[in-house]
Length: 434
Ligand code: FCX
Figure 1 (tube, protein in one colour):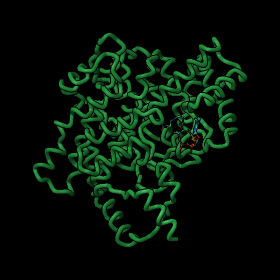
Figure 2 (cartoon, helix red, strand yellow; figure 1 turned 135 degrees about the vertical axis):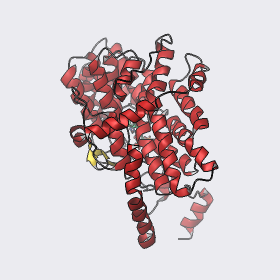
Figure 3 (cartoon, rainbow, N blue to C red; figure 1 turned 60 degrees about the horizontal axis):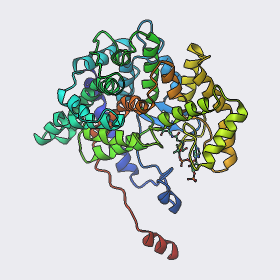
Figure 4 (cartoon, helix red, strand yellow; figure 1 turned 180 degrees about the horizontal axis):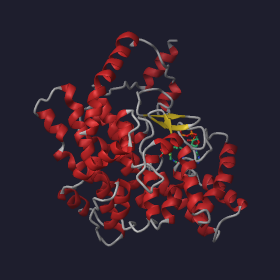
């Protein structure tokens, strides 16, 4: 299988590189940790190697060292499409090599062979009330597949440690192959009276998802989903969802257990849920002023949000210190295809006003928009108006990056993660003894 062959060819090089780093530079100090960092979410403390993607604070995410613009240009596209095939993106994330179109298609073909979702997943999702959380359904559906984990089976059959990555990769391809239908099933159950649509094996990954949620008639929505999945696939291995999955995986929990845990983190309002909250905030703003608001109205509304002790969703970032290039890519998509859409124009008007207001607070480190500032407006344009579903779209995409990180961790035999915790009394004595 194509991904296994590529990783197999490179795994010894990765291992040697890691072993050499540890052997020759194991004592090299890369950072000191301050009391403030310990109390502030270990912000800025390097805790992880993330060769698959890296967030450059001033320029945004790089996948395998390619910027978003480079990726959009260089990854292969299916005939008639302007946006890369998801299969090619997965190949790059997994293996550090730009694939040809035929390699991208091979990954997509592999997904098609493995796309059948076990019935029990649907039963688990069906056991939720119709108004249950879409993210809880997604996480539970993913979690349930742990019983089929090939890694878990291999582990209990005493497969050697050096081969753990193979069954982890196998699980990862199974999981990512099934994600579009699981995500679509949740959408149809919650918002389309449970009218389910069978997958169409002729379609690529993103177009098939679009088809299964009833948007197959609009080729532009498939284009949006190719872009959306690409932009949300990964954001370094230290954010809440990726790091959670990595941590759980470090205990040799299988990919389903790890990814379900990651999805639970993604469901938080400061992380993945922000795109839902952002779209709701934009809609409330738009309806409150009965149309596209003026700059003064946006200013009034944003200040009220802050006075109420709330954050302005879609703005700010723990690492980025610039306008998120993913935001820019989405903005260009909307400008090219529906510049007059009223919610998009509202989001653009907000972009002109909100950074200045956040800067005035004197505490927000990054006043610029992140990708969530536009996600919802774009989905809304195509009639995907159910904002409580947006994080599922994020989760569908993020499984690509998270599984790649976990496969890499198993390939280089990363050990169980166990940082150290101290008591406040210990910190006080360390300080007083200085
Ligand atoms: N609106 C209002 N206040 C904000 C803010 C915003 N958009 N962004 C940051 N702040 C506030 C923080 O709440 C914090 O206030 P406090 O000192 O009173 O607690 C202060 O500014 C300093 O925070 P800062 O260091 O700049 O940011 P953090 O790393 O603590 O937090 C997030 C980063 C993303 C959580 C923060 O900017 C935020 O809440 N943004 C809105 C939600 C959002 O868009 N999340 C999506 C992030 C991302 F894209 C993702 O993970 O998916």
